[in-house]
Image 1 (cartoon, rainbow, N blue to C red):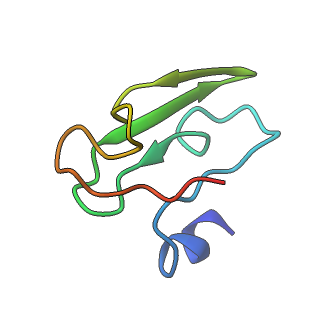
Image 2 (image 1 turned 180 degrees about the horizontal axis):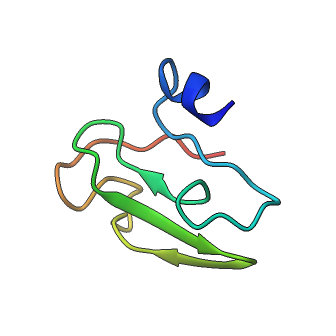
Length: 63
């Protein structure tokens, strides 16, 4: 399901499973790591204070 969603959507991750790669969010533009999730822990790796990718400046949609 994740692979299919990634073909049309930019910021896809799978929740409620223990899979570090599937729980990670990458920038839809430059593909750099944005958010790393491990269990219930979330680490912001690549978003600036305005919600943009620190690497390329892409505005990241957030819910």
